[in-house]
Structure formats: structure tokens, C-alpha cells
Image 1: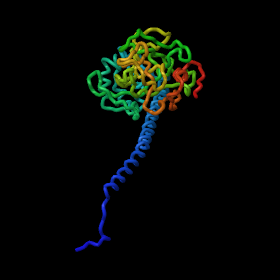
Image 2 (image 1 turned 30 degrees about the horizontal axis):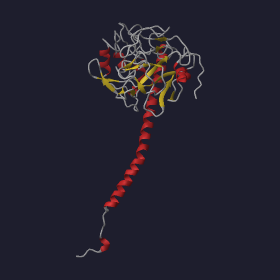
Image 3 (image 1 turned 135 degrees about the vertical axis):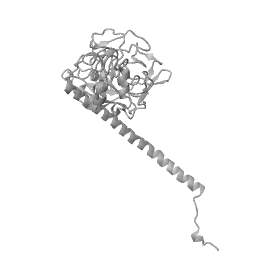
Image 4 (image 1 turned 90 degrees about the vertical axis):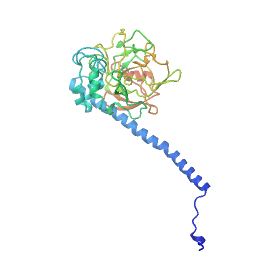
Length: 346
């Protein structure tokens, strides 16, 4: 039987098929950057919202206690007993980010951030992810291997601002220097003229005399740095021993004295521009001369993987995007709570 020509069905030729595939590939190539932009915009918004939640928590803590939490402090009254490396602001605000059950199980009997009672606190927090402390834009892992017992330990992608070093744009006496060493354990230069500071000195809203809308409280430190030989390194105040460890003393940086170990975990002292990621001394870095090193640089720059800058929480609870092009002098003025300078932010 002869099939009428009108009923014959002709398939794609090879050339036509290749053309269709090429068109689809072009469309995917055009759409992919748009999809990536939408994803990054959503991640950046979530990152900003995390800081907003931290800001609400800091204000709630202030309302309940009459002052901001310490940036970090040893286990001493009223934050415990026994000394050693104590806890950070990230621990003290737990009840105000819906983690009061975890906070109630923590113990502060010496080494709550690193040492004896830290093991208990790590065990308490191990199975609970605090999403508020992880920025979804960050290429950093959310956890690291605990140097206590080899188990997963959550990292912190945000950093409290303890101040800025003297000499950038103004002079002050609220800082500690150190004896200087390349690797662990000197830290760099630790300031105490910010909002989240080491030690027992209380920072109140009225003590932020430059104005809460002109003073930094928390920002980001969650991207890789690169050393002079091109190595990519994971250095940051909350990226080594996790989110709990804070400070080893009751003293607040003052008078420019030498404290020997000026490492401030979960805190940073402004010394460099935003997103200054390249050209640092090769691992383990140089804590003594640059304050940028693996264990642990007190002057590691604010940084993120967001295009062009970092999210930043101000002391009034607002969040803004600070660009990498911001002059270092302006950034330092934002970091100090009581330097008396007028910020000119272009």
C-alpha cells in the first residue's frame, strides 16, 4: 500500500537539531546570571536580616541589663567564676534570639569559651544550628572541627566592633598592644572604644556619645583572605574556634598597655579598609606586626562575598551597606563610640 505524501512526517535534521540546542544554550546563558543575581539578592537580604535580629537582641539585652553585653570576658562575676578564656557577646544574647534554653544549660565555671566548661557548652549547642550567626552568601562552611573533641562546631560569620586603632583619624588611649609574634598568640592591637568591647567595662546607650546612628556595632567577616603567595586562608574572629569563645581577661583595653595576648574572638579592631583581602603575610600570618593571622588576628578587615562591601549593624539597630570604597578614616570614625569627630560619609 502506498502512503500518501501528505501523510509523511519529516523529523528534525541534524542541523535543525543543533540550531535548537544552540538556541537553548544561549537562553540558559542569558538567564543564568539573572538567576544568580536573584539568589545573591535574597542571600544578601537574609544576611542583612540576621544583623537586624542581632541588633534587636542587643537592644533587648541592654533593656534587661542596663548596658550592652561584653564583647567577650573571662569567667568572672557577674558572668561566672574560674577565669580562663570566657564567652562572647554571641553567648550572652542567646535568650534574645530565641535560644534561652541553650543559654540556661551553659556553665561559666572557668574556660567557658575555651577550656574546662567549654566542653559542656559545646555539647549543649552541638545539635542546634543558630542560623542567625551564618550569612548564606558566605563561601565559608557553617561548621568547623572542634579542637576540643573533634566534633562539628558552628562558626560565626559576624563580628563585633570593639573600636579602631589610634592614629587613623583621631587619637585615643583605649587600646592594648602585644609583645608581637608571627603566629599564635599575640593578636595585634585591641581597642576598647567601640560598642562590643573586651572586659567588664560597661557600654551604655548614653555612653555612645557620638550617636547610636553614627556608631558601628556588628559587621561581617566571612570571606576568604589571600596571602602573598596566593594561598586562600580562612581567617576570622569567629572562624577558628567557633562562635562561643570571647576574651581571657576582665580588663578593657586602655592606656596603650601591653597585655601580651591581645586576641579578641568574635570582635575586631578596625585597622584596614573594608574587603582588603589580598597581600597578607603567608600562613600563619603575622599577628604581631599586622594583626592579621590564623590564631587569631584582632585586626582582620571587615569582609564579605557581597559585591562591593559589607552589611553593617549600627548601634541604633539599623542595618546599612558599607562600601569597600569607604575611606579608612571614615570607617574608623564609625567604629569609635566617643571620639567626638563628625562623620562625613560620601
